[in-house]
Amino acid sequence: MADDEYGAEGAAPPRPNLLKQFSSTAKAVAAASGAVEQAKNDVMDSAPILLMDEILERLKMLDYEQQFRNFKPLTHTYFAMCGPNPSEQFFYFTSIVSWLMSLLGHSWQPPSQMDDPNSSAASLYAQLQQIGAPTNFQPTKLKQGYGDPCCQVLKFLLDQIPIKFEPAVHREENEYEEADVDDDVEVDVADMADEVGAADVEEEEFYQAGGSGGEAPRGGKMTDSILDSSVAPEAWRIELERVTPYLKMQVLSDPKEWRNRLVNTKSHQQTVSALAPDTFATLEKMTDDLDRTLQALRKAEQKVNSQCQAEVQEFVDKQEELAAKQEEYNKQSEYINTLTNELAGVSEELTKIKDKMDARGNSMTDTSPLIKMKTAVGRLRQEAKQLEIRIGVVTHTLVAKKLKQSQTQRAEAALPKNSHLQQDAYLDDDLED
Image 1 (spheres, rainbow, N blue to C red):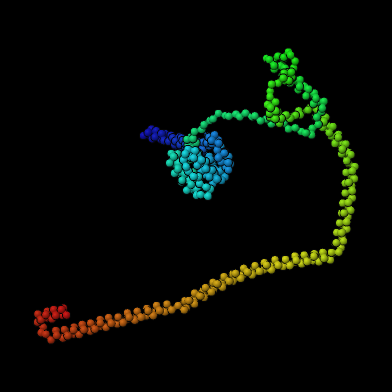
Image 2 (cartoon, rainbow, N blue to C red):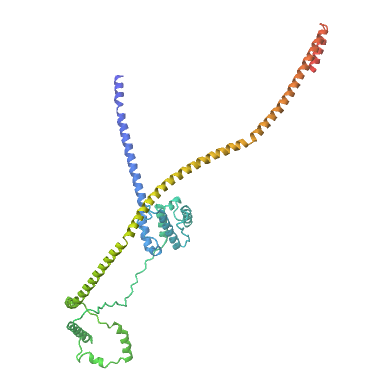
């Protein structure tokens, strides 16, 4: 027995360890489930962003910027996350959905910003059901203008639209821009002659080398063949008219341009030096005239001040008086406002008292309670009369009963004592009465 008890007591302690293991396992399972739920939530949150990237790329392929010039360009998270202006976001979403439906051949007029969002979302939900779009969500989800339902709708509509990639078309530029020619730039004649001579030599060598297979002709220059030309003069004139606008001399940039600038600077310095004395004299003369004019103005100002000193002092006094009157006016205005508030309170109290007096006067002049009392008194009188009549009837009945009873007693006293049969007859007569 002792061994059994000891064994039982020894087997009991492992139970807390099992409980601890079970609790730790439960906590681990709860933590794992929480992690799974968090991962699912993260995936659900990132799904609209991934869809929005693909939606934006497809919309760019459809050149949506040309269709929605009045809207701002879309971002990679515009319809995936809540924006600062939900109404504008919902209107942008419905406009794009309506445009995509029109590309698919379905007509659905987009709502305006003044329409009810609930009715607009319900109308869009019904239209999506008709075209077979995914509608495994509530219509109120579309009213938000963002989230996974909106991205799913846009993704479904874009998947239905085929995108064609056409080859690029390169246009030839036949017109060449002419270089800007500065007419004011001075050109060195010697350098220009060297450049023109070099150009003539290069042109001559080019034409000599292009006669036959790149070899120079043996019999003189190319100008000899030009003298015996077979081209009609009219064709030459037409060609000349065509190329005349292009025959403009283009001055190439000269690396010695700073020398010309230096020469121009020196010439301008000489011109300025020649004109400076006359200019300085004119400026000094104008300065003297301005000084004299300013002195005359100061004297005139002093004279006007001395003559109008009394008026100025009077004006200052009037301003001070006006300021004092304005201050007094402000104080009186505050006092008037206070009295006006008190008057409003007294008027309200007087109105309440008048209402009470009117109610009491109406109650005093009202004869309806008196009429009710008179009616009740008349009714009481009628009921009293009826009670008196009933009392009289009952009294008469009692008196008649008493008289009849006394007569019966007298008759019984007059009858013999052994005539019980007759007594029974009398009792029957009383019962019948």
